Structure formats: structure tokens, C-alpha cells
Length: 141
Image 1 (cartoon, rainbow, N blue to C red):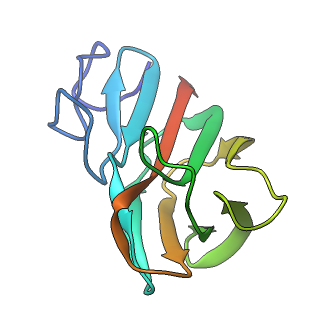
Image 2 (image 1 turned 180 degrees about the horizontal axis):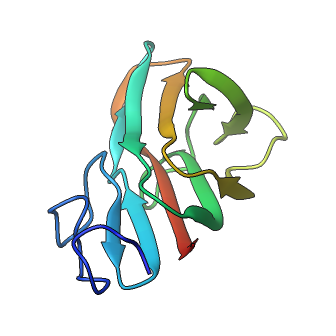
């Protein structure tokens, strides 16, 4: 259980019951963060940024490249994950231009008291092509 708010109270860290936004949310001994859809931009944009509390997290990041239902077009998107400003991983996805994957699932352990930031960058401007970055995991003391 997270030691934030006591007794594993739901959503103690993010104060966002739907989970859409850049923050980390807790429910019991589980944690999650969902960026929601962000249009592709030819510039860095923050998909997620949060600070973990006491207890490490064991979970998964799930990234999707720019896509819209019924549209075969797309572009190249990278997601850069940093822990305390150190780059942990860079994931490249594409939708329609290369033979790269369109989504990725990455296993991760996140230490206690870590600033986690995910920056997304795309090679084109397309507000209708939505990217997303999500985290789901479990808290361990």
C-alpha cells in the first residue's frame, strides 16, 4: 500500500479520479497515470510528469504513436523517459511512414521518491493524430 494518505486511500497523490493528466494516481496498492490523447506536435511536449512517494513501483509504460480511428496516415513519434533528469529510455514509434511499431509496452521498476517525466516529440503537426503515454503498476514497500 502507498504510505500517502494512510490506509491506501484511493487517489491520494493525484487528486484526479479519472486519471487523465500528467499526475500519478493511487488506488490501494496500485498506481496509474494516463496522459490522454495529445495531438502530434513538431516540438517537445510533456505527456506525464510525477513524483513517486515511499515504496517502489513495478509496472508498465504503454506508448501509442499518433493515430485517429479510420485514418491510415501518421508520422514518427518518440517518447523520452527520464528519472530525476537521467534518460532511462527512448521509444520510437510510427504510424504509416516506416516499418516500426505503432505502440510499445515497456516493463519498468520506479524507485521511491523519483521524478518521472515523459516527453513526446513528433515529426509533424497533426492535432487529429493523437499520441498517448500511460503507466500502470503496483506499489511495494
